[in-house]
Image (cartoon, rainbow, N blue to C red; front, side):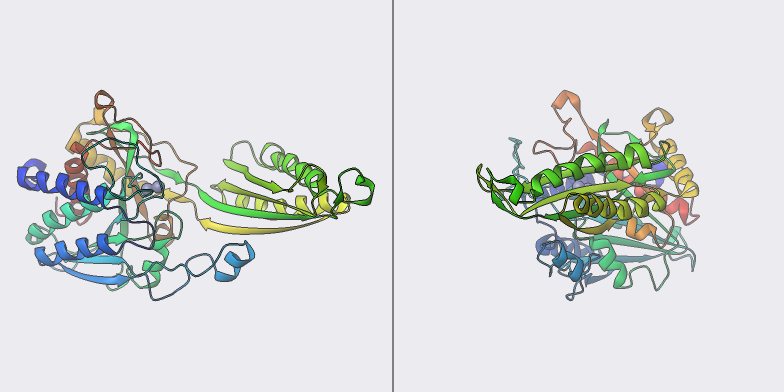
Length: 420
Ligand SMILES: [Zn+2]
Ligand SMILES: [Zn+2]
């Protein structure tokens, strides 16, 4: 039996996918606020008669950053995932076997959409600019197909619809709610839309996939005073400027050139007037790494450099370092399986190598427990002007990619469970 005979996205299902993606695109919800999206997902699973659990990843549990760490960084703590996670469970009728998890994220971004399309976001300042509307839609399509193919496989498929990927770490909260247990998950796959490839193409590679994404905040305290009497002050702006320059050496002089790392100071705030030397300055930035040793080293050295330079210049520096999403690696065996299935479905000329990203991704929390593989799903269509990257106000996707994603994830699950 060929894939085309086994996995058919009918014209009706294809139309439903396009319509559902457009509905979600028009009604985007920010991280922690995915109430309506979660309701749509659960409602459709109920219609399909698929076993599922709702309200996951909530109940006031703090997210992966402790409330204490958030407060120390000047961030108001208290966000939770709001319990909008949904887990569907499809049990094969050929008996017990392995358990594979497929994941989609559901949240949108605080961006004002600039596309003039009939399905433009109806919510000012909120937009599905990372393609999570497509991820959610695709996984619902996969649910329908795998549910109709239950007599074909042994084992279990879990479908994870997660909230709050864009920062708060909704995946971690759902894991804390036990979604990887009962039955225990053996492997996990996810798709992410990718504008560097056309609809109908995919990219997947083993090894480094997304980076660890941390943030830091340095408060430099000096002594304020009159701008014309610097000798009576300790100028925190000059101290902070030295720290910014010194931080550049952490990657260039202290990190193995064969390792990847980024240290970026994205914010530098100080002062109120030209004739005043302020009493403090604040630096904030992000650190991206793959190697845990490089991550540990940078965390330690940012604080040491800041306080050492401040002390040498008669000031004080206090550093808060917040660990964000961990780095994620695609498992070689799962990647080989995904690549093989993609090649069978799409032809080898449409399957590309995927470049590691320095962006973070909270599927990395799943990767801390089970082997994972994240696949890039091409969504670009240059002839139609669909070329902008995720997180851009003109990001869009070619909806032909929806059926591709559905077939790919369905086929990967069936192959992993040994059905084909
Ligand atoms: Zn994103
Ligand atoms: Zn995303």
